[in-house]
Image (cartoon, rainbow, N blue to C red; front, side, top):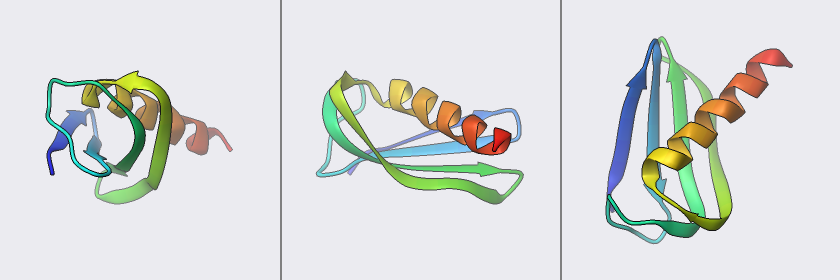
Length: 72
């Protein structure tokens, strides 16, 4: 299983394609995502995409979702 990790400010975003995948390829379906902010988990969930996405695009979605949680 390939894992994509990116650091954005104080956040670390990890993305895994459920069922496996290869970095640099687009996939639709379920993605495991974890977002931590200064070591605290703010999002640990599965995101489902209906259209094929690159790992980095799913990381963008995870960041947006975690931003939305901060606003609640």
